[in-house]
Image (cartoon, rainbow, N blue to C red; front, top):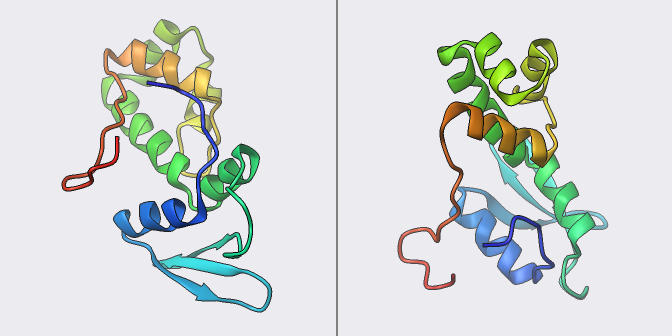
Amino acid sequence: MSRRLAPITRRELVKRFWQLGWEGPRHGAKHDFMVKDRLKVRIPNAHTQDVGVGLLATILRQAHILGLIAAALGDIARAKGMTNVAADAGLGRESLYKSLSVEGNPAFGTVLKVTRALGIRLRASPLAGDPSP
């Protein structure tokens, strides 16, 4: 399994957002957007080519998807003792508190170090009923 983002079609991006409970796409003045609760994320217009890696990363940040993963890791780390987790991961405790919050934006390397320190593994798998790999 690749740990890096890859280009994705607009159709596939919208499909994945639907699976995560987002609504749309809705038409805006210049761009379409997806909505979930109070979050609103712009998506490329239908006539564009595949969504590149840089834009995909921006969209995921705007949707707070990566932040939710970081926050969940933060909850686990606090339950196990942030000081011990930080030491096992080779990271500073205070910076780990900031990184592992919904507003945090940890590097993927930080996430990997924390998951190893916690003794857990992140795994991507298709949603139930989704035939794509």
